[in-house]
Length: 202
Image 1 (cartoon, one colour):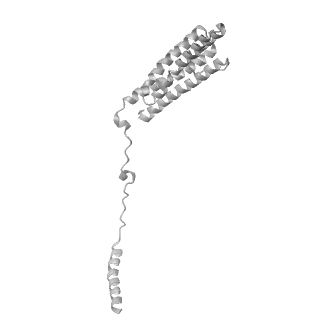
Image 2 (cartoon, helix red, strand yellow):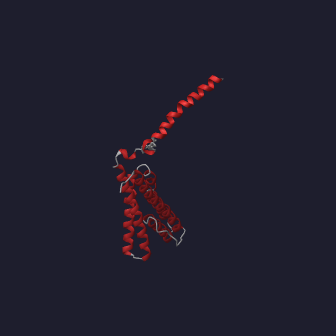
Image 3 (cartoon, helix red, strand yellow):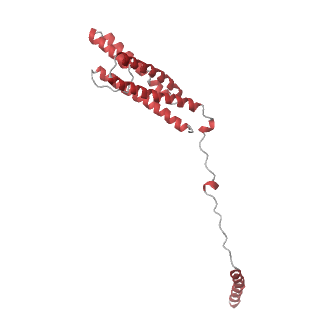
């Protein structure tokens, strides 16, 4: 299948969209965690949430506001580091490699958590992590391919010549019989003479 700049840019856009959805849902989960809600969304990064949960848990156990502040600042930093790359990858799609590496580490972390404390619900988180990784890998691959396209691939399409769009249709000549041709030749002088007589009479 031929890969055009438009098709590759569409893949990169889908990759960036998945990255943004992951960021938004992770932020929502962090707010819900801070509000002690039992609801959470699986389409999110794990490490920032665990850092926030650790800081909040330490705060509730020891009443240490420092641990809470550190947990909030560090978790927001770990999540916010993705955000600049969402905007930068609009003009420099090859930078998708950075969030890809970061999310690989996040996926390795949740796989480690699943291995040491297996729960069926954690498989949903693993599945969504693999989903995000899949689109990030596609985005990095598309960024690599679009850089290797020849310059002429980005040229605007040339308009087709009018001769191709509207070809000239040949017209067929209708054959004229000998009798018809003779009749035309005989009537022509009579018409001229009639016109001449009318002129003299006037």
